[in-house]
Amino acid sequence: MRWPQPISQGLNVTARRLCTDRRGVTTIEFALVAPVFLMVIIGCLDLGQMVYAKGVLDGAVEKAARDSSLETGDTTLADGLVKKTITKVLPKATVSSTRKSYFDFTNANKGEDLDDGNGDGECSEGETFTDLNGNGRWDEDLGEDGNGGANDVIVYTVTVAYDPVFAVPLVPINWSRREITSTAVKRNQPFALQEGSYASTPGSC
Image (cartoon, rainbow, N blue to C red; front, side, top):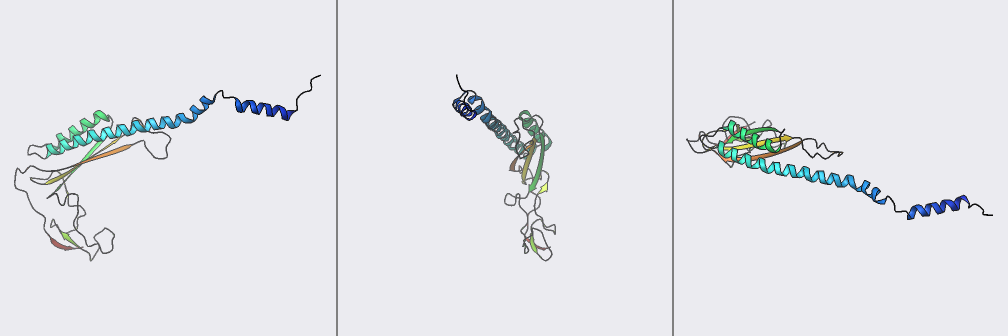
């Protein structure tokens, strides 16, 4: 007569069988690795799209800035060509541009010197500044909107916002929208005498 095995002994046998059973291990490993692998691939494609678009944008902005600096330059046409070029790479992108003119390269993208006693970055009462453009007030940026005139230095900036084709899902950062920017600095062709100049007149806030 054969006596049945104790329950505990049967469980031990089952546990040993499960520990040595390798069937399905590959499926489990793939399920663990696949999400990370796919996110890495999507991230690489997303980065590649951004880098390529940035290269295309830089080239288009440089050409547009150069064309706009000529006497016969047409800023509207130049902006249109930039948009046409970048939308070939990013079809539904939103393109915006700005132009600021300065008297020289030295003061491009700069403001007037301020004796900022309280360090708040503002022209507070009693503080002094150097009134370079002679308008009687402190300017954080000396640039004037537009393409300027003869010999003026133009800072041309184009910003492109787009929805990526390969957006990385399930991340804490909002990666559903990308933005790239390109800037070119050119001096207008000297087709006439340059108007005005920067002075060193002291001013008070």
